[in-house]
Image 1 (cartoon, rainbow, N blue to C red):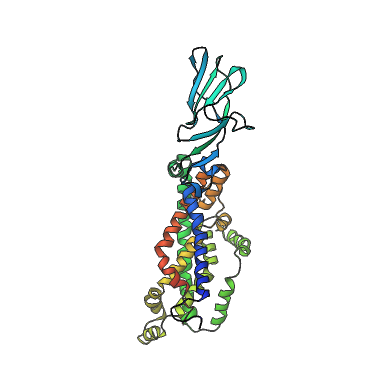
Image 2: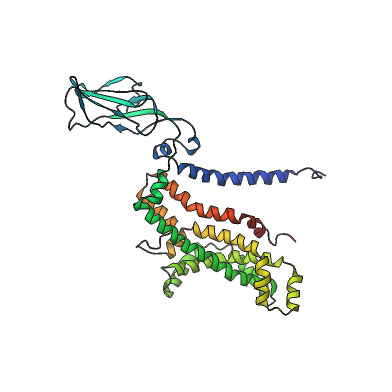
Length: 380
């Protein structure tokens, strides 16, 4: 009597809470990646993305003073701004890494050979010397400052339009499309025929084939990489698109057949029997009745396969062996950015978000078919 009409059981609430937690676990990293792609390098190093909308106080990297010296009475003077591109408010500063907060804004620090330097709240500095500063190594200034929220499109400008980066990313983008689209379509075509045969055609060993397909779902693809690569190399297709298409097709076929077969089994038997009575062939039944009715399951698997192949790195590294970079995919290109731009996290965040933009678009465009396809065959 606990689960009476109009009330929800504790299990229902547990399911809702679990779903909410899973959604948050996926949304927060994606949101953080998006926000970080619009932040500057200094902000990424000094604080997390969740603090991007608030004023932040942090110790900034050392800034070496620079500028042209001007003779002002008996002193040579260099004036300038430590933060020309931001409206920072300095709370403390120093001239040594051992004491980065030794002075308050407006204080005067005495340095070597009669040099003095002062920094005000806005970041304006004044360096004075009784002798010429030509050829001298100017001091560094360490600051602790409050900086307002700052967002920029420079990361996307460098990623998409910089000649040194955009050409490689554009090539990797089209290479990834070249891999993903055929690797999504081919297994769907093959699995649809197999699923129809396992669902509606009677032949010896059908139950064993279904059990074999289910067993293949639990086989890690890593076990098959080396044997499959040796086979591809023996056939001469191990270093190009054909090899990676066939590899993705083989790894995606068990799930495709399983999903489509479960969906097709749940279709009304009367429709198929009536078509046979009317003289339709198996191929006509498949193409004119089964495929249109199975679109939710086809779309469901297409989403999964597209996401897996687009985000894949392992299969691409194994089967797209090309030292010239002509077949480099986006996941590998991002790895190369990590190697050459290990400190530029803002560029890496931008590249990563650009790479997930297409899968997100595919998912939201076809999400209404996802649940219908996944739940196919689960209930009668």
